[in-house]
Image (cartoon, rainbow, N blue to C red; front, side):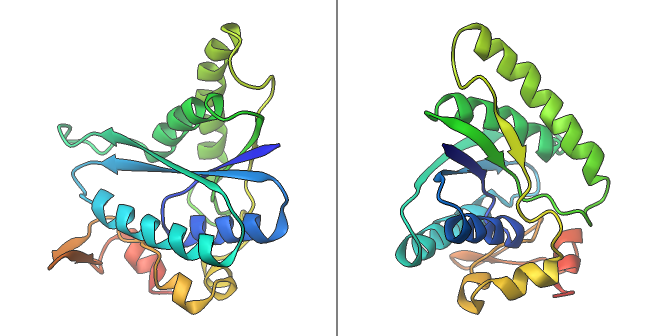
Length: 195
């Protein structure tokens, strides 16, 4: 079986990736969505993903990595990430032979996570039914949450420090030379400061 790992380059999804690489024997397809919007975090996340993937490939086992992009920069409102993730997960799942699971790094402590996860699965199922009617994809795909019970502090401790340093959390990065620095004030930065 292949597990599709939805990967952002953040602390949570990196800890999930490491857990799956170390504790499962599934083939993994790791997929990153370059989600461009007015926050401007896509470049910083892209850079983090590239570094994390290279680090993990050098220290764990082989896995397939892919990327796709959604560009919402022309919109004033920031689209709902979990709906976009469900949409892309559906497309990638049908493109992945023997894909039987989709792994998402949702945490129990996240705000309204139970409802968000349920809405995400409903979006996925509606799309996936269309593809199944055309004979595409596996008959059933399960959503899993490998780090659901963990805290951010526990996830940070589970990673080698040099890998944790490669992750990106800020929602509104500030350009700094050839890279970015965290804004220090967004919700993600404030959560990161607690670890």
